Image (cartoon, rainbow, N blue to C red; front, side):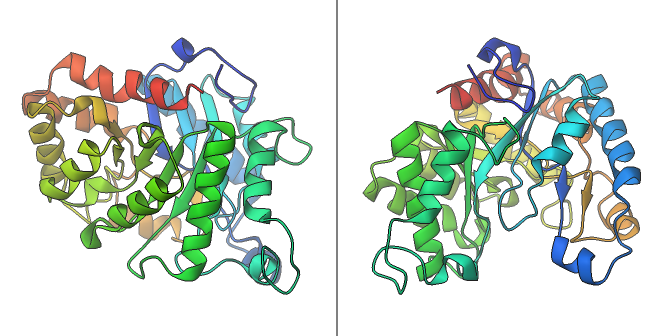
Amino acid sequence: MIETVRGPIPPEDLGPTLMHEHIFVLDREIEANYPGRWDQEERLTDAVAKLRAAAASGIRTIVDLTVLGLGRDVPLVQRVAAQVDLNIVVATGLYAYDDVPMFFKFRGPGLLIDGPELLTEFFVQDLTKGIADTGVKAAIIKCATDKAGVTPGVDRILRASARAHVETGAPITTHTDAGTRRGLDQLAIFREEGVDLSRVVIGHCGDTTDTDYLTELMDAGCTIGMDRFGMDILLPFDDRVDTVARLCARGYAERMVLSHDASCFTHNFDPAVKQRVMPHWVYTHLQQDVVPALHAAGVSPAQIEQMLVHNPSRLLNR
């Protein structure tokens, strides 16, 4: 069974799945001290409309990878989930590019407050017992490496994620900077920690056309996330489609998942600016624009189904 916000479901109920999305990306500290950028009830209504549009386009499941560092608020997501005919899977993990938050800085093995690794403990708790008192269990672990590479703080987060995976069997999904090939750094640490690489998604691989890098990850056993469709400011639409099509032609459809990394609301962008700069960065872009373009580029319906249905089911099924 696969855990969702509304409870566990069998893998065959996932259907077409967006493997890397967000519902709300929030900065509660900014909002508490400098309010005015967030109207919760307005944004709840807006989120329900956007997720209903995704469902109407044919999507059945969205994996919400909003974790610590991105303002995870599961009770808020529960309110949205109760109003949409869509499965929402939530994640555990920590999103940071360089260091752990101060709460963890002095707590842990060999640190000022010596003790077990709280990161691993928290991740395992979310996966096995549930998140706070919501009754919702996470189904996937999220971590990140960006241009700064594997700093001591990032190393700690990656290893805590790997150990939570080893303990629970939960899959790992990542944020990377594709231009600097940061997925290879993650791969090396996961290997050291005994991670089953077939349970790993190296994220944001769709931001590059470097197929040598991408095939190196897939040949190691990982799945790659072609998961930023709509973020055309980072790589144009045609390049994203062409890269997926070329990899499918080489037999790699079983090692890719598709998504947008979009959100209903994010404090990181003013909504009007996001709409102007990235008008296609929405949940419906994949079904409306990407899939037809992939078909035109020679990707078969069976390969589309593999990337949207079978690969997510394989990854999320523990």
